[in-house]
Image (tube, rainbow, N blue to C red; front, top):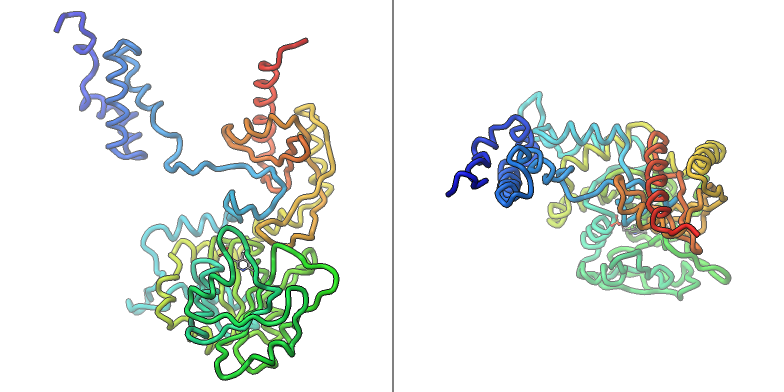
Length: 436
Ligand SMILES: *Cc1c(COP(=O)(O)O)cnc(C)c1O
């Protein structure tokens, strides 16, 4: 090695790893990742690409800004429950509960006696307090799991009676007939696509019936010459009645009058209802089973329940959602039109965009017929991709050749971030477009 060889002056790995900035980086990213970044930076210094004095900064810069590859996004689509970007955003209260539950926690432990206790009992109490019509409650991994558990426990080897009008595909691989088939129950279809009467069910219900299942066809509507048997009618058949309400509304909400809710379904005679935790309830991904105590207990004792159970983080987030302040989903659904207009006007003025009236959506396969009147800033369509890829990523809606930025589902304290993101994208586009 010659005197001038830069390898002589590039600091050694152990020396670099002792640098306070890299010690801090190792606490966040792990020693292995920092070592790799240091080695890469040393190589760049040896090749002369950077100076030896720049190695620490280069290693730091090469480490990711976040500890996961999941990128937080701002939802400017106006679609409240957007499955592709994580459905329901958690409330601050739920986030705090998740952080508190992350360590050791009494999820299944009685601190008074030191003995084992019912798992997630606080969450179950909160559910029962929210739905007094339910004798008991159970939480599983998601809505599909709740439905699988209910049909397996009640009808494996027997029949599940379902209307042909409810043979739905909810989204991404959730097809009701396939799901029922996977449980070992036999599907017994009754009625027609547009009309099914109580008599159609009554004609097939017998000793081989495990349960009658009523599914809310949440993502489409059949209009015209239609009829369906009500929960109240089906409850007279004398067999267990499972009602999959889907969206997780615990009580009626006048904003979405066609969405079934747990309280009404149970009052009308459902044996159990199943629902998702991360749709209109606005909580974490979870499946809820609410209803008659003996039936819920039968589901809880089924071996499959163990495989579908939720972790402490979900239990914590769900309880905080149930007990805590209004969820972001509820706030966005009921967003005040006037306040939305003022925020959107401010953004339109700041970015010289056009204020337009738009309709937001409930989303998540729910309430397809319910428009949410609101406002957006219309920008050139080319903005959408750059906004998505920006930092922070902003997901806008592309409609008829325009990029619509809708603030309905943006926390108001993030309006400034959206404004900066839009201004940055417009500046880049202006630089790309030659002046004429
Ligand atoms: C969304 C939905 C499901 C599936 O729930 P996941 O929580 O997504 O598993 C089942 N049934 C209905 C009616 C739904 O709307």
